[in-house]
Length: 255
Image (cartoon, rainbow, N blue to C red; front, side, top):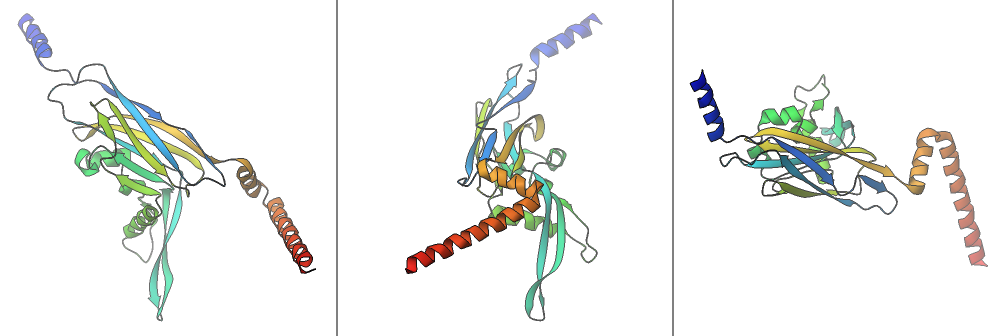
């Protein structure tokens, strides 16, 4: 027994101890104001790796994946078909819980640093972000409609996947930058951080970003949502006043 205990202690002393790694997150701003002059914003994301032991020499390479996800909601996708020589919308499918904004940045090619199982478990990637598609009685495969949501929102700069865009220094400090386009919607956004070794997630972290309207835009939005009748009457009144002012100005100009 004593010999076995000594051998166990010797092995622990000789073998390198795997460091317990934890991600520490940071973000340049956690509140984005939407107003009439808003034309997009840059979001600087950074962080560090905290560990309680040195990294073993033969440890697999550390990678970092950062995602930013906007509020989720349904998206209706329609497919055009030729009908009596005219292209019309014939089939529509609803994609449930598609994020309004979704961006991924990673230290290397995403497919090279993480397994499909881990991507499914932590909902990383376009296929995992947009995957809940309602069934359709006339369609056997509705997956192309989910792919269409990704393609359309990529064209609108609402979705993006940027490999090699997270900069990691000495496997300790990392940073990346995300572009928030002018057409983002109001709501709560989530930035998630994943530390990956040997294609498995070893630590995660997250932080929230609030995107909301401010000033007169906020007041009008709340009025339209909470008191639509007053909002409608106010819109008609403003239109009448603008028409009267324009007519009066033209009459004075003719004199």
